[in-house]
Length: 147
Image (tube, rainbow, N blue to C red; front, side):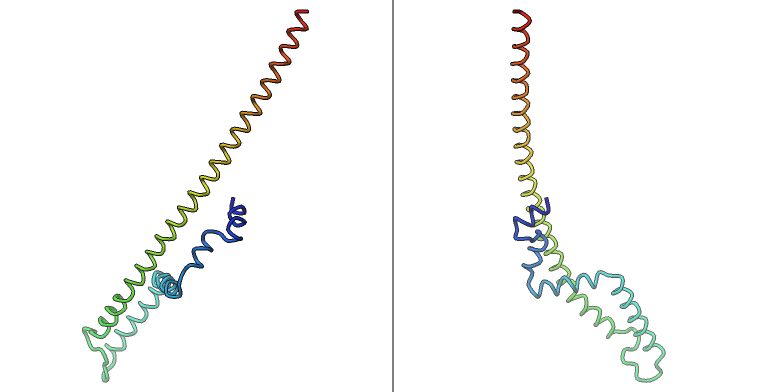
């Protein structure tokens, strides 16, 4: 069915068509949401926080962010203020993509239903033709036997 779908849509699947519609900002938001939702990001951020706190606790002079690390908290607040809407934009697009996929699946199911109904009609016609043929032959046999 995918091949028929690709041919019907100029060689493109529903996912390829959906991706083509994304704007530059939407693509960036998706990339950022993907990155922030990864173990690589969590590990990097953990190392960054440990280094930040370590340098500030061990530095005898020139502590740029002494305990209770107000600057670090400000950085995290700023990161969260930007990350939340970006992630929500990506989630909204995911929901849109899911709706688009559901619609394409529905269209495919309707086409499949039509094909199945056509096959059932064709099979019923063939069955009726065969039964008519059997009936004719039985009548011929009965005529020969009664003659």
